[in-house]
Image 1 (cartoon, rainbow, N blue to C red):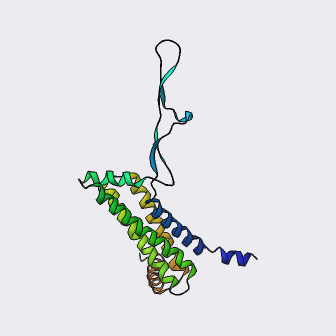
Image 2 (cartoon, rainbow, N blue to C red; image 1 turned 45 degrees about the vertical axis):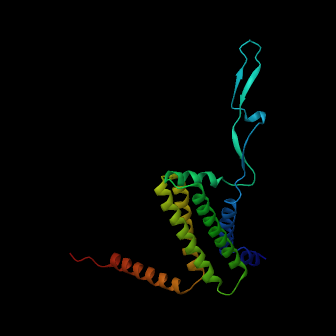
Image 3 (cartoon, one colour; image 1 turned 180 degrees about the horizontal axis):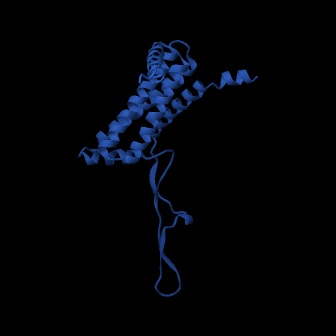
Length: 202
């Protein structure tokens, strides 16, 4: 029973599912930004103005504006702001945003597809991880150019995570790249061992 569960919920399957949903949902999120509306609920009141006649009547309330709808983060406004700094108009910003979103959706579909196919499965997995790392690398360069340190931290973290998972996949799913990596690693470790064990000559 435990063996069946371990095989069903293998580490590789969980990792691939995570990245598939990660890219798919992130890509779709860029197409669903919600709408910017005032939050008029009583609990959202920021401040009030009281009437000066001593009756403590509220004559003015300040409420925040919030994004409402199916969304993770409103990328439209953020991307437009980035491109405004370069003097580029809104349409160019949105075109780039939706192009990136389409790439993310394709990557997500490729990850999920690899869960259900046996033909060239390992090659698809390795390729999608390489593309993922390339995308995060590109995002990081973009963040540096626009001075967004929070996004740089986030994309840099995901780049490291994708690299770790890629190496794990290489070891778990052997192939030509694994053999090369294994050979290089073995050579380096052997050199280090020989250096440590080398007798000292006085």
